[in-house]
Length: 318
Image (cartoon, one colour):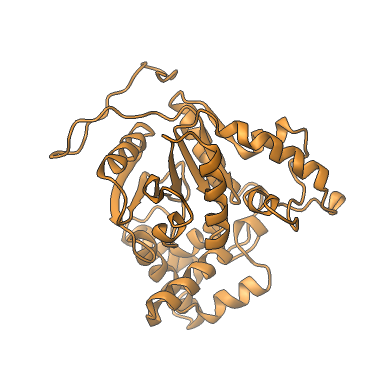
């Protein structure tokens, strides 16, 4: 299926020294999401390139279910899917409704049919991702590649839930997705080179730049970025400088598009805390230990942009 965007088809050059390949383009681009900004940005990205984008909000709409409904606390395999849906609580409709949840699930398998690439971006929970991918593997076409947007968890451990672990690899997009060009492709011990090349070609067709890293806790980007963010928090605790000036130091002095504390607000303080705890436990290195200010803010519900307050106060127009 050729792109429908301006200019018709696009050429993609394979990296020097690698075999020439014909990229497989995604007909449907499924983002199973908990963080809506990632899903929306990916959908917009694919639409700009002329590809069909199917997202969870589309599936919910087809099922005739209100966008803001609580979809959790269900028994059985529904829990696997519902953990992937937007679980924003509507205060006017706070009671879980199993009938509506099942209506959404009824439309979910059809969205996977014909997909060449399925990208997951659910909560950073290994068990949830494993159970979700096991179900996706049953329903997606056998030739479809599966990708996780995890920023820290072991891709090989996620893939262990599959009958064919080789078909899953990491495809880590960066926030804000519409501005950041990097996509980190994470390969594990069983990932074929052809799969890496195929996904790298898709990344380039989306106007992004891929790098390839081996499966290791935090990969390359999260380990570096997290250390910077946690140190910035410690500097706030120690009174070295205020939040704005710490961010400006990195933006103006190192050409970062966004300072580490503002970026933490965009990513979510709870997400940063979960990643820090995972890396500290896994690697046992002190630089990943979450500072008190991060734990305290998460405990108070100051989660960043999504809650309206983190290291900054956010408004709809911010």
